[in-house]
Length: 287
Image (cartoon, rainbow, N blue to C red; front, side):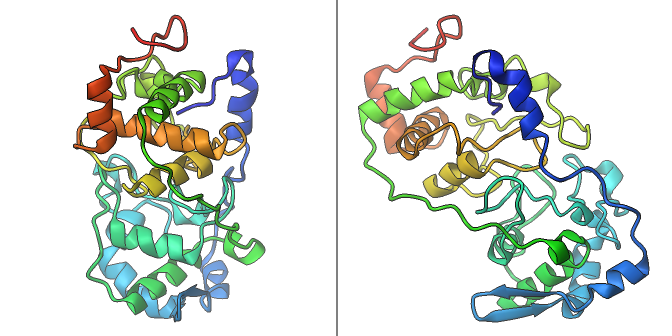
């Protein structure tokens, strides 16, 4: 999704691209060694960077590279490309846009994997292994020395799904112009879809809600809500925290559930209503 409210799109697009990513100066082995004592803290488990080195080399370096720059030997054949850990920019976070994720966020990503990518689920790792890997990943970027993770956003209790909420969610989908990237039926075929690039200038596809895939940062309703409110840093998907009230975000979650192929209460209600796609000419309402 891109924010596209009236004539404000150019300015807002610049704002979306403004969080610190730019470039990291060429780092030396001395730079990495200076951060070799990096730790992570996940619940009661403390991770140590040096302890995560061997697992990283065995399981991660082939894609992410020995230096964490996303330039592993497999990287040329992968799409999407592996994360460049030196930049310290992560899509999946519980923290506001532009901020570092929590150690827990990173551990959950390791365990969950990323659907529609070559990043598998590493849910066989022990809690200690994941904590050590998180610490090792952190040691690649100087951001972890100069910055602290953001404060996780608060997700209000999920309301009951109703017909009115689903219809209101359709209006939100139209108003913030989610359809420009995701398409009016959520099939990733909006007019902007073919032009999208990540912050490194590489083509990136919007999420297809209708093909049965799971959102990369989690598939629960709370996960989808979190994506709206944190954005996916490094991609064209911004945070809507300043544009959507919590109730509106929940309405949008329910409408998107109605677009997904998986059976759900929202989808059943939408079918009973005979709910139609938005009319992009009018901006709202059924086609």
